[in-house]
Image 1 (cartoon, one colour):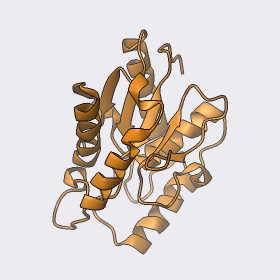
Image 2 (cartoon, one colour; image 1 turned 180 degrees about the vertical axis):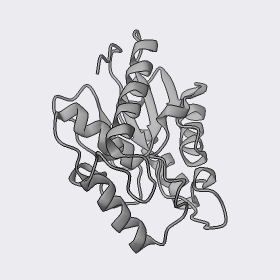
Image 3 (cartoon, helix red, strand yellow; image 1 turned 90 degrees about the horizontal axis):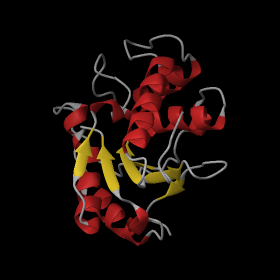
Length: 192
């Protein structure tokens, strides 16, 4: 990854309203998710952010809009910052989703239940973040995205194999890492 900006931050959306009748990409933040994002507005690094880039998915946009309003910035949307393509299954009950996600990370070269392979999704998110870094060469962008692709990106940054061990903490999202760190790792956004 040729990230040329002064620093780049990656943040996942927080808690969402899960509704099996609505496409996953249209799920928005829950009130708890909104509260957690607002609580994170005290992060000491946040004022250094010069641009906000978001996935086109509603939950990421909800997060990005709260941050943009606080910082007086616009949200720039990049579809390639989206979550791994799970459209073949859509909503899955929690236990079934967890089993499928485990298989997704365990077999990165193959499609699991029609999901795009993890290796393909890793290439996409790395290229998307690289494009943001190249666009924002003189600034400090914040990317608002999703947990699974964040884990794939983190594996790339650390030079490690794809593994669910690199997934964000099981706290319903709202986690971040910095590309500037020598060993990036997940941190909860709503905790300073």
